[in-house]
Length: 112
Length: 113
Image (cartoon, rainbow over all chains, first blue to last red; front, side):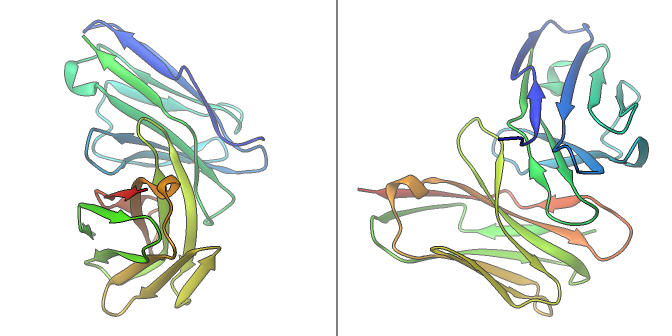
């Protein structure tokens, strides 16, 4: 199965530390998305890449957040100076053009 | 601003029952609508995608309908099974340039044996 993969699956960090998550999309997909989901809510859009270009960013993506997709393949999402409010499930998805988005298993972040 | 609402928030049914989950959205200018399933602590599994020009899509025991003009979609599950227990989410993509999916909060389904 070559679905979307994310690493790590779980991350516990102390407030103020930096964390980085990785997403590997389905190989032929040119679009990659990051979402954040808190308990009892639906996922909320963070950002989107077409190939290596970051084309859309949500206002949720504060200046402590940065995402990259350097070669148009895998992507990383970094959170600097983590806060307790950053605790959430971070979901990555990919698609071929505007078609169906396929999601990975997510990275659960806990900030203590 | 697009808002997506799912009713009911939770539903409990006996095994074998047919059921309908509802999704409504405020802006009818959508490109497509997706239904997802989410098991506790897991990612999302795509169930069905309906393009804005389509009225319904079927996959196995699942049937999703779309009434774009009234801003509604339904997910019909036939002959429910305990393995169908999960949270079901609907999400819409706008017709314009934004690529984001806007999600509802989901309906938590429990199918009792």
